[in-house]
Length: 251
Image 1 (cartoon, rainbow, N blue to C red):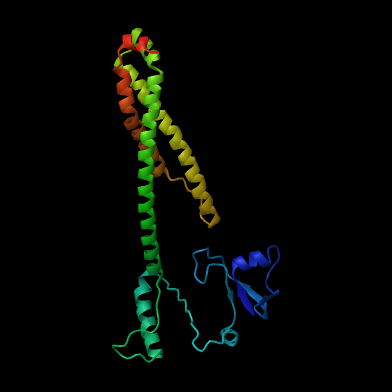
Image 2 (cartoon, rainbow, N blue to C red):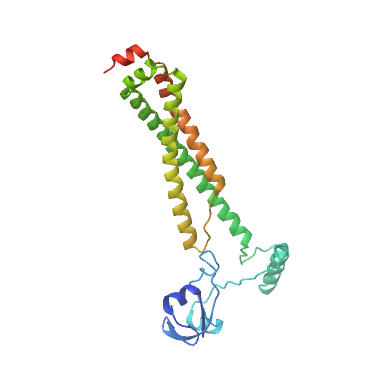
């Protein structure tokens, strides 16, 4: 007899009830008597890719003289985790005949320790992502400044005409700053759409939900606006200080 996980059921019995069906594991045939609820990819025992058979049958298959066993225990509440861990440690030490002062010859893994380890890994990934993002933003801001400087050079005559008909330096400066901000926001909008699409696609595939990170969306817009202002300030200042007479003579 065997109880199978959700992934095994999906691959072998996609459109039929698996209970009562026969499957082959290694050289032995087993009848499916039950189906485990989906745990997701982060669940214990390898998530949903699992087959559970009777322990005596497993001993017959496993010829190792020192087999390894894993016992899973679920507590009723988070507050009982420490007490349950202590009770399990005491029980296993008694079973294995360990005296006071002897080290444990078994390992207890708690769900919160796994969570802490994952949190540490995520923190490292976050720091690396922020560093890469900052380097990318610096490169993008330099590129945008060069683009705006080229734009000022190519539109020198236009700037001279505008000044000749009454445009003030403030108006010219605002024009180029707005253009710089708009270019940044267009790029930021593309990044937001792509990031949300990829992130939510991954989340949906691992049984998550569609999420709209409003805080980070607002932060992205504010950041793009700031980069646009910073990158466009020098080109806009240069354009506003052009001499109308010299600008009109420029070819």
